Image 1 (cartoon, rainbow over the protein chains, first blue to last red):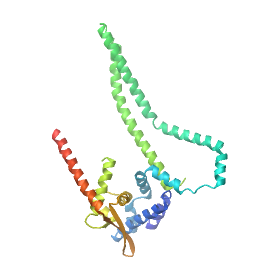
Image 2 (cartoon, rainbow over the protein chains, first blue to last red):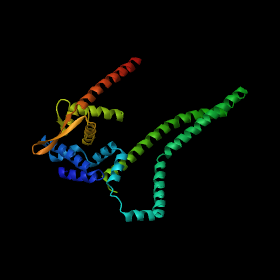
Image 3 (cartoon, helix red, strand yellow):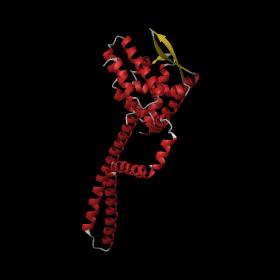
Image 4 (tube, chains in turn brown, red):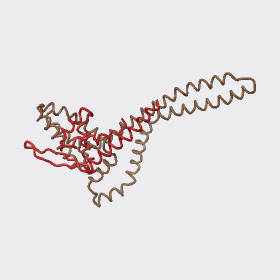
Amino acid sequence: MTKQEFLTELRRNLNGLPQEEIEDRMNFYEEMINDRMDEGKTEEQAVADIGTTDEAVRTIASQTKMSTLVKEKMRTRRSLTGWELLLIVLAFPMWFPLLMVALSIAFTIYMMTWVLVIATYSAEAGLLAGIGGGLVVFICSLMEGTPDLLVGGGALICIGGACLVALLCVLATKVTLKLNKNIFLGIKSKIIKGRN
Amino acid sequence: MDAQLKRGVLDVCVLAAIKNEDSYGYKIIKDLSPIVELSESTLYTILKRLETAGMLVVRSTEFEGRLRKYYHITPRGMQRILDFKNEWKEIMDIYSFIGKED
């Protein structure tokens, strides 16, 4: 890839950022490529050293707050004319339900990522209840002189299961948090790229 | 390393790289490469943050027919390095205390 190709692609991928920031970043990358070429690297090598534009977008996304990106997007929107405003108000019964549906779908999809976590923690809670109940019944039966071995054994099985499921809880939480982080990063990358 | 801690450490690394003489982007990356791998995008963010915090100033200088940005450390930036060193002493004290417990 030539320097010009890289910079053109970069500009396209940073479309969602403020204009002056795009210029500033482009200058920065261009200087970096030029400095590498001055050192004797070929244009191809120098550009390859910088990495892909997708990597750049992802790094920028991970280092920029979502609120900053959204604020910037709002700020660059042109203000609405009177007619447009009137149309929006009149069409309220139409777009409001649609907006609600869209929000509900987004919320449902988001909650689905947490299903695994909820399921494992529920199982853990069930097993803990089983341990508690089982032990109480077993100790009572012990004191009465007729130990209920079936319940005691059940409590032991629950203890084993609870240990195992506790590990699954931790694993599920970790995986889900990572997934959420990636989704969040993906959304931010989309905003930076600015293609809706 | 904890993300917050790493961010603070990287800031000081970049300040240290321009402490003795003004430097430019690629030179900072090269100078720091033996101790820490910095990507261009990461360095850009750090430099912007330090500039906003008044710890460095930027000046564009002509170099072989093109502009190159040089970064110059301010007294506040110098102070940040000193503060970091002092903080580090505290952390080392804690570290040796933890070591004694073994």
